[in-house]
Length: 533
Ligand code: N01
Image (cartoon, rainbow, N blue to C red; front, side, top):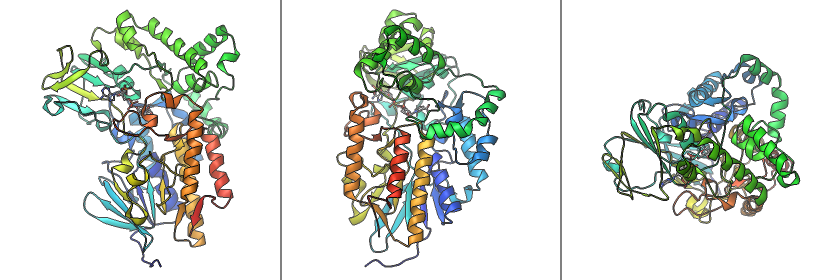
């Protein structure tokens, strides 16, 4: 029999990025709960607080990289480039915090180290690095999908005499201007960094393991008239976004690539290449680039032909040209391949010439060369999705650590909840949608808010999904992922980037429209799959 104890607060939210900020607002200001939000950073913003590397920007077009819940805010907040720079997104999130007076509920510089559920009181006890604890009824993890840095262990790293940084912890005062810079990694982050750093650095050495398919972003200044027009169309835009697949603000194609002639395919690829954006190229050209091997090969061949056109030196072009599937999260950037035509940019293929060690002067490769550097940048990505969960002492019923539940890979029910973890919710938890993230975050926050409201109104002590519901959702996600080519490419999407990490499905890939319908359906059926007790 549970005992009744009054908790310190009603809800703890961990993280003050896009998810935590909105969750703090809805729980506190809509439901009237006492909310404490903890943020490990010295400011709000999450990803946009930490990722300050040169070139950091959102590769989703700015008009849909924002919240949509506040119609006035949509009209008030302006933008002046097609893609928002890191500083712009951060300023936007800081503005939202101010607009809703959220700072008084957010404790900065506070890392949560653990959260343990007590079956006697049905309360969570949340511990922070400063040694304090807080009890609460509801625990919301807004820990970030791509927030735990992946730092490969390279011998000698500690001996490096210059600045060694991960892009996810970029120091405010680190300027690469006039310096000899090395960068390891050519994913979305590396590509953005390389294009931005090359003109500033004295010399840039890129250590590339796997070449990437990069399409132009089409970034450019935006006139106020265009902003005004976008604002007038916002109602329709957001309806479309919420009912789409990837939520990037364009209509996904419904035409299979092989249903048209080769000439037409090339025309469509070229048209979308000129429009810019990686997701548009993968999902706006044809309906099956990410699912049909022939369609995928056609898109990949088109991009390869563009690399050959863009890069002057044939040997550099060869190293930059991927030969695998085009089935990772699509990348885009302005002038990426052309950057390698600069005399002060050097490409080292570490597949052909591996890094053997880091020395005080720089990076030594297998050919014996020491690449002398003042700054060494790790753009090596993240232990995505579950990395931050496993890093905490997170224990549900029976004191069982989340690791013990996730031995075969991270699982959830609907991407927002987990069996054995009552009253715990996740924003962008495992097997949530694979989309432009703010619209999915909004869907989850609003849905969790409704569920907590229902629990509060009906006086139940705990809300928890069943193990069967969670297994069903995992199977659904696996089935959908298997209809795509994504599982066949090695990337963070399935955990393949972390040595020793179990390859597992980590996303619901049927799109945001289908996902929102699933959420609505579960709610309509009195929260089918949940036990409210
Ligand atoms: O990380 P990644 P990211 N030795 O994992 C290489 C989002 N994002 O930070 O491909 C040498 O994609 C690794 O090589 P390989 C977006 O969702 C969004 O770039 O594994 N190299 C790869 O080149 C994105 O998908 C924006 O062979 C090593 C790179 O490091 C996600 O974040 C901007 C290595 C890691 O690429 C992750 O992107 C930036 C080693 N030991 C990021 N270990 C927006 O615009 C790893 N690599 C919103």
